[in-house]
Image (cartoon, rainbow, N blue to C red; front, side):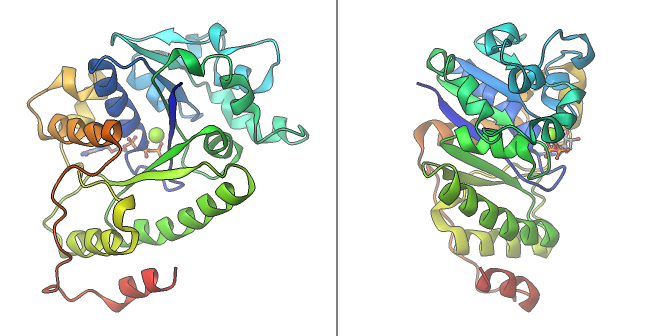
Length: 279
Ligand SMILES: Nc1ncnc2c1ncn2[C@@H]1O[C@H](COP(=O)(O)OP(=O)(O)OP(=O)(O)O)[C@@H](O)[C@H]1O
Ligand SMILES: [Mg+2]
């Protein structure tokens, strides 16, 4: 039975799609049958994998809204062996309005996935930057969540809100939901705030933070244009090294690297400290 992992953050541009595509690509390379569900009307994962969303006959929208359409009608192969894609379409933006009167609106994805989840080892869900019905459907059927996060002040403020939304979904809709890891992305260690942010999140969330971090790497802007994962585009890049490590943590479900101590030498601004003391 597949491990179903949602990749969420209501903040835009935190590295959700980049993480979904590259973690999935590495899982497939390791021989795991992997499926990406693109739940974002922007269709970034679909585009990244070289599929034109306007050319697909049926998409995630049809699976969620139409009884007669199943996953078998929409799943596509990708250029990567063992990696499949359930594509998005811009019509997904109408999901909230069109599901509004449906009694099972938070469980549509869970119901539809029941037929196919035994066929895969991993299902990764790329969520849009919102807390609409699309990510709620994703979180209701997931066992685990990855939260890509940039170590910046405003992103940390958003993490507090996201954590309380996840707690609510866990208590009201899916008691099995667990945080697999907060994943620091686009990390540039030069500004002081980066270290403050990483240290504080590690201190506050402990084991819920991946040991691996994803460093800033220009190849991530180029790989989607080539329609390639970072491993195919440049397997010697630091981006490839980082996503390989984080995927190993995903597979092993445990932290595999030495956890550096919280630095005491840096004076953490009160505003940031307060953010976490309040949760
Ligand atoms: N480690 C990295 N280094 C440099 N650029 C990166 C890195 N990770 C992602 N990017 C770039 O940052 C941008 C945002 O990344 P991505 O699309 O993965 O974010 P997202 O959270 O999915 O965005 P959205 O919320 O709009 O769905 C993209 O242009 C991507 O190529
Ligand atoms: Mg995205």
